[in-house]
Image (cartoon, rainbow, N blue to C red; front, side, top):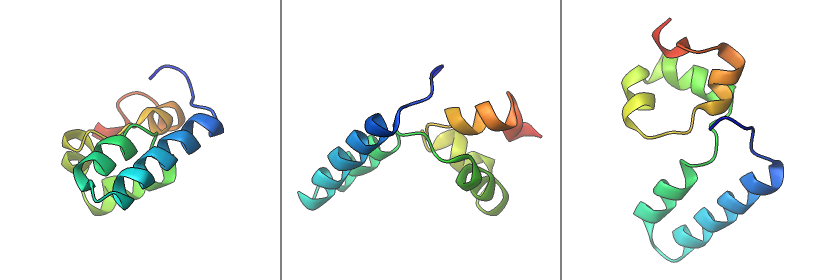
Amino acid sequence: MSQTMTLDEKLAISMKACALRQAGDREGFHRVIKTAPMPPYLAKVAKEKIGVDFLINGGWNLSEAEAEFGPGWLNK
């Protein structure tokens, strides 16, 4: 994503994901929640503690982390 999501957009994603989780749709919950940008501090911790493959192969939206840490931050 090239633009930063607004707080309203992030909240809408969270509400949709929560509704899916409450309905018992775990797969849908995970699919939707990953469309919201992962906060940069969480992405950094996940990279250090869980590994780069988790972030790359997990389908996470890392747009805010890339904006904060720069392109290629996962490989540094």
